[in-house]
Length: 212
Figure 1 (spheres, rainbow, N blue to C red):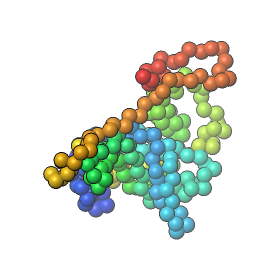
Figure 2 (cartoon, helix red, strand yellow):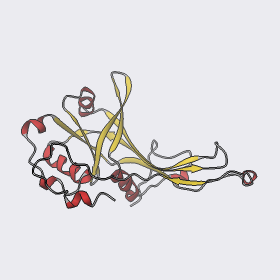
Figure 3 (spheres, rainbow, N blue to C red):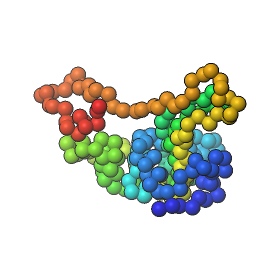
Figure 4 (cartoon, helix red, strand yellow):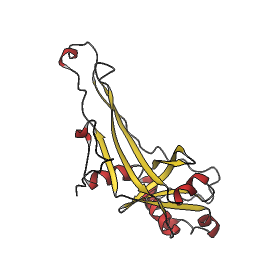
């Protein structure tokens, strides 16, 4: 499904990098773990890193009831949430033409409080740690009371993707310097057990499936 841009989501510079389909938006958000949420607080701009997860047509944002800034979001502040995934360095034959491979998404809207906190936490857990929720104890009442989950509808957004090769001008092609793309890969390392782990439980199969 393709969504037409609004006045503030239309890409005016390098519009060829825009992706207007929902599948691209979902792919970027699903690969992200942190969103930077910008809003105005007491007349000043604020940008807060927040744990995030997509659930259907909304973005869930995880915070604390003790956070003054997060409570401002809960009061109906207009926000702009962004995520950026860095996929590689583009090494051109000049510093000017060198760039990066990236996927980014920007979502505008007003965040609202999720009343069913446990369901929202389960959705976020499954996005971050698929398979683990069912093995954990249920959240305690005081834990839920300390948690604030907001939802941001995916109604107004833009996606920008850069994935090309170096675009050197013809006059630079004879320069005696290597040019190409250096991919950046993010992955889990070897699982390290907690020093206070008791009973020698085995590494869960779902965790083993996340690691190389």
